[in-house]
Image (cartoon, rainbow, N blue to C red; front, side, top):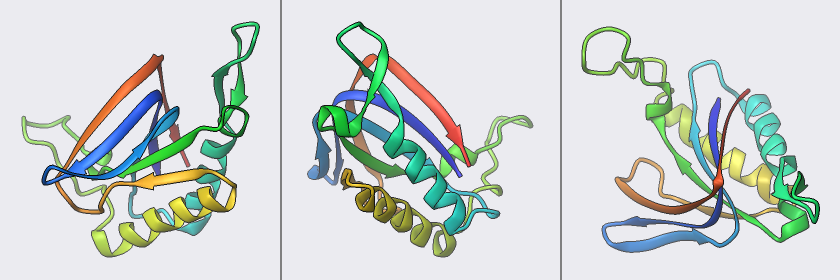
Length: 145
């Protein structure tokens, strides 16, 4: 499981022009799932995201987490995180999990975040989405389980 985590001052996702998820301050998480992933990886990664300290304290150090700043998480599924473009010009996505495996793990990830006390907004799985964000910093991490 792979997450691209961006610290944002705001983020939103729309489908067909309709807003489906939005947060203020927090994290935009682009979530990719591969064949070997299961609930253990999903839970570990969700708890890691919930506990990350990426917000600045009074001394300007990244020492505060989502709970400290009242932040939320917008989670967007993104199978292209497992794209491989090493050969040719068209990426291969064979490392990405099939939707019937990936969707329950995506939902599980969001559920674990909620259980950790995090406000969660979501995109729509398998939809063509438009994601808008204001990356704060910019701060961007890639975390893998």
